[in-house]
Length: 549
Image (tube, rainbow, N blue to C red; front, side, top):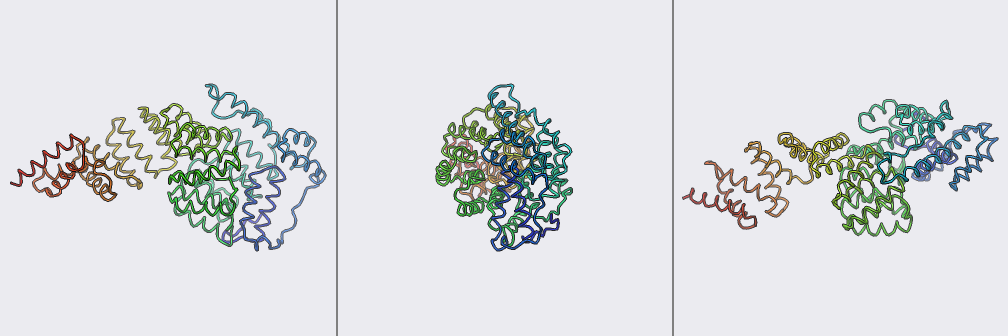
């Protein structure tokens, strides 16, 4: 392995390493690792790919050469998803590759069985949060003393399934020291890290430099998983997509698009997917990211046409079902939308965005209990999914259970501490709990986090400050609400109470701005239909006229 890999360009050695990893991953049946490595290879400029490597041909152990026919036949069985047959064919295999394939096939068969047993308990109270695979511990014993880097990865996978996460990380790091381009190893690390603090600790332990392209890709993927992608990460994405790196990698572009979505740069995120689908119009991978982008901007037409197209390509892909769910959600067909999201989770129980969106559809259908169960499944599948934690907080808040709502909203904020909407929700929860001072602090934090809809926060702050009798501060936020409403051409009815508060404050002070008060009151009388507010506005106008005389 080239541990001194320069992060600014790809050379013949890099191409050789990725190509070797792709072949080795494919030979062992690791589909996702193979796809990822091949995408990177295709993403490199052709002239760089064509450069001859000076590295010697990979060494093939003697026992693996002797088992070549057996291993190749078993690999064909894996291609045809005949995993039990592959296990039988590999019964006498002694090589490291043969042990890997036999153990991995046994793991897949046992996982399928566990998943089937788990689904048999659907909608029953005794169903555990995740499928229980009782064979993992026994399989682990077959690779417990492994030193081969691929077997170390497999050992890490089994340790992860046993929920021995620290040992998982240790094994992955040992494996990455030799095969840094095995993306399945990096994804195990993604699954083990649940907060920025753990990520920072991990980076200090990596056996390869942080400038290595694989580490940079892991960091972008990790930032997306933690929902902490920021504008500072954009240069890293641009560098990875530069002409001397991986300019044609669709995977990197998809990750870049997701990061842009997180920072709400929807137009730039959409442009990345236009590039992806222009290069590979039949690519379904990562389309759930594009669905989120189109859903956020409410692009019904594009979402509809894309949904119809991918339905032809692969109706039994979770990404397809997720996209269709988003399509029907925008059309307010919530029952149909929930069915597609549920289908996505049946195809992949770890698809946490589908669980979250299904919960939101249940909220629309006024079924908070079903929504909470969906959100719970989302965080079971992915504890880093801040949307699921935040949505669960909203659901409990709607049920009038502030202490449950408080717990889940705080979990969301732990994952994404600068999320304005969660701070706003937290303020509402403290308001329900009878803690107006704490609610005020949370709403102020929402404003500091650049809340996209500040008008409603200004109005709520005004009301809460009136409650605690801080009238000067209440007037300040009332004036902010009026200024925001006028700047955004919002109908006066939506901020009439703020106009009234400012008018009262000015009218009741001997040195107040009576002209502003009169202007606001006249607008209220002319444009607001609320009888109580109109009556109070007329009273103040009458008082001002008498005072002037």
